[in-house]
Length: 271
Image (tube, rainbow, N blue to C red; front, side):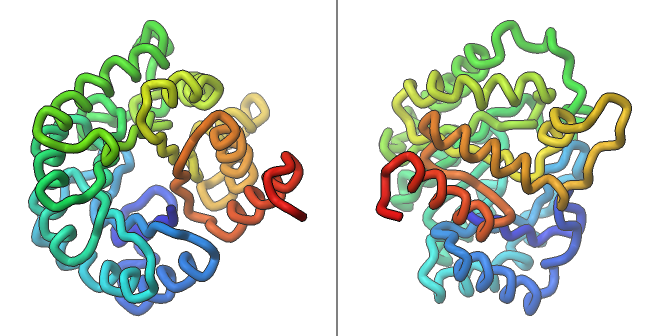
């Protein structure tokens, strides 16, 4: 899954793809590099980000949905707004990816009506209320894997109860969202326990601050998001080995190459 942020305030690429021409070129590159799904969003998921009006989100994403569809890619819409999700599904998106458990029931019902899939991402609260998530206290969770599984399952039950078929629901543990570096690493390490819940697991470690925190020498400044590719690849490989079905990344070509080499080494493909 390749990322296309149509936002002015994304943590990873700012306003680089607000312009339709730049966004089209980016989507083309993601598909050429090997992305099978393009995740298009117009509302930043960084902590403290202000909500974006649904009409503004729709104005930003339409062209990119059409471009990705024309290239034969599956389209995922990254939003917490049922109105935006409904519009995007009408334009050809087939996945709703929400970074909030709150609208699980409404989005589950919508996805069921449209024959779409739903990615429920674990997080506590909203983007606006998550300020300071990267230094979330260790004590915020008893056992982070058990707590994430329990809280996610409650939301999943609401989506399933609204009519969503079980096979159309994906679990995202929400690496970095209301979790500190220790929590995110533990979720990666024990991802198999989440896979055992019986839902396809999607992970999004790409360029997250927890990678920089783990890799930085004590007292050193954290690397900026665009310089976290090494950590991204390490996390992706670890998660795929533990059962992740989908990986959401910004640097598609490098990750595709890493996965191909790792697969060859493991003997899963002919070199």
